Length: 317
Ligand SMILES: [Zn+2]
Image (cartoon, rainbow, N blue to C red; front, side, top):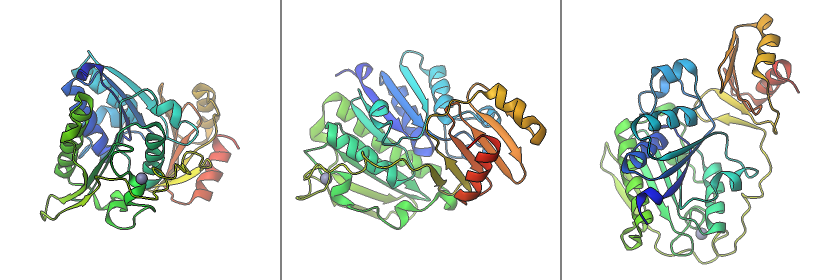
């Protein structure tokens, strides 16, 4: 396969995701689908290389901002942006028709969803994470190598799951993105014998390096042996506390929002503004960001009940 014919879907376009998107777009991978649920904030700019201050000022969804930025340096490739949270309900729509799936997320719930989808469809995917100066990655070719559930039957506790409150060294992000994007090129170019068959973890500050062999699927693995894809049939989780963000996501079922009408209704209650992609409303000490499909991120609380009642009061119940 030529890189220009390669199709990649990337879930999560924060630090690792934007580094990956940038490398793959500049390498000439022909199609990138970028899925991200969040919007750009000034605090992201230290490590999220695809965004700039004007994106943060507009609160652009990261997927949209990333697609715009990529177009500005490589207009030859196709970039599809989805400002959405990956869920069992939309996983098929968002992850189908690509050659490789990439993990730019910050949570194991979404990683298990990607793993179940990838194993069920036989599509390669790459797990990647970076926290502080530490990074970890694993390439999964279903049926040939271990999958995420082979290695971690349950969500691992500890460093890989730590929220980004401790910050991320941008060089740890560059390190992991270099490794992952090279694995993508090997997959797209058919160099499967060159793929790394380990779970690699490396601390770029202390040089602590560890590898776990992933060359064979684990006998009895829930996903790749028993084909029990529990995460694909997962219940919709309406409210999620966003890791390290002092924010809660309200995940409504499809509730199309008319920004003009909502702006008119909210104006008496506090400052409100919107563009094509997001509506922002400030009600001290909270900040509500609303997306056109009715999803919202409420900043200023980690209490889902508080967020839920703000949503009900200002958007609708
Ligand atoms: Zn497995």
